[in-house]
Amino acid sequence: MVQELERTLSKRPFPETAPAAYPVFYRTYSRRSVDGKRESWQEVCDRTLKGLVELGKLTDQERDLVAKMQRELKAMPSGRWMWVGGTEWSKNPKNFSGAYNCTSTNVVDWRAFGLMMDLAMMGCGTGAVLEPKYINQLPKIRNKITVTMRGDVGTTPAGQRREEAEIKVDAANNRVEIIAGDSRQGWVKSYQTLLELSTDERFDSEVEAIVNLSDIRPAGERLKGFGGMANPVKLPELYERCAKILNNAHGRQLNSIECCLLIDEAAACVVAGNIRRSAGMRQFDSNDEVAAGAKENLWQQDEAGNWRIDPTRDVLRMANHTRVFHEPLSAEDVETAVRKQFHSGEGAIQWAGEAIARSNIDLLDTPERKNRFLALYRASESSARAYLKERLLEVRGASGK
Image (cartoon, rainbow, N blue to C red; front, side, top):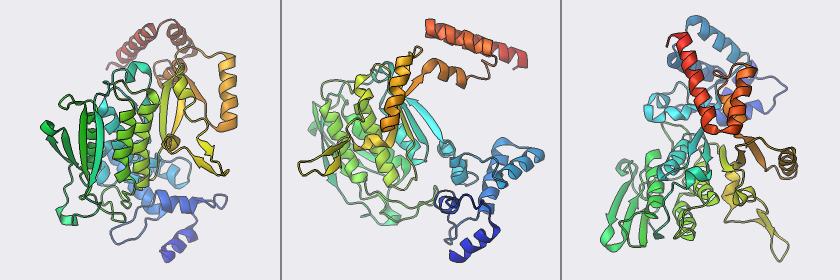
């Protein structure tokens, strides 16, 4: 490893003005081969370029331009593509999302929670839209869950582990056994199943969830496809912590912060598992007062004067919180938000109209069209939506598609 690093340093692919470039590169983007060697910068460029050429069906001229820009450090593929691009793992359809830096999900059912854990385990940033029009579609919590852990991580020999989770339902006795599988899907199904038990009408107000983790590979084992090392240190805690959040909402729907906590508990578990990052964003309605103050006073002082973080809200640090306005903000709104961001780093705000306009720059390609869209959005979201559809038809008609 030392000799390999010395060879790489002698070529000086990164400028001397960026002394942190080398540790960041080897920590985050250089994959380890079967024989234990780390990729050089040149090898990463070759791998990611080959993948882009295949994915985008690039011409020779386009390939040469991309290669030049990357090797001269003028333009790069996405961070996720730097890690997985060009690998066999990235060519499997179930892993396609792993090439994306960011995602966004409207939280309307339990599948949305499972999806975000799946995305996080691929290294994607997870955006969760937690506005009332979405989370009000979630069912009321009707069952209290008691979690019993059975089977330690790493108990089952490698060749005998099941990859898919197995769920054994004993409705007559209000009992379910969740046997987590040793795969991304195996983790996700065990997590999502626990959430679903809270609203499952097959049970009579209470359910015992027996969670078996014996098939999960222990810390330090290689993740052969995605890369890196396994570290399920926080997985045993996940189920009990989620059950507590669900039980606290018994008899009603989850509020926005409870949804956020469930997502962030999974995110904390994933990051501890060496997936490298948690880039989360949680979007709340501008009038959601619970969300607006969710991160306030996270650190608290005990009687002896020692500071500690509130353990029930610690995982909220896994994501950025943004309040979404569906009408133009006043100067007072902006000033209040900026002052809060200056003092605490929190208080992000977004005007939905502007965000939507920017994301549709191909349709709103002149100042006049953008301004018309914004005027329509202020008056009626449905009118603005209709205008976008009208522009889409115009663009398609002009292009002959």
